[in-house]
Length: 70
View 1: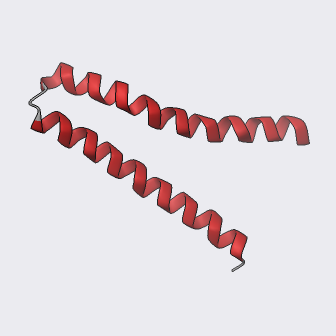
View 2: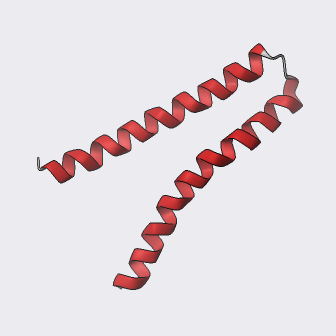
């Protein structure tokens, strides 16, 4: 296994674990604050948009690389 392959796998696993932990933190925050169903939805929507933006950035970079390279 090359260093580049290890880095790519480690990044994918690390980001998956990090995002999962952030979702757990949002859930725990909603439960501890007794936000209710509507409040929990707002928390996941507002705080989850940052996670969505991070993931979207990855796919946008892939799309641009395919357009320029292909």
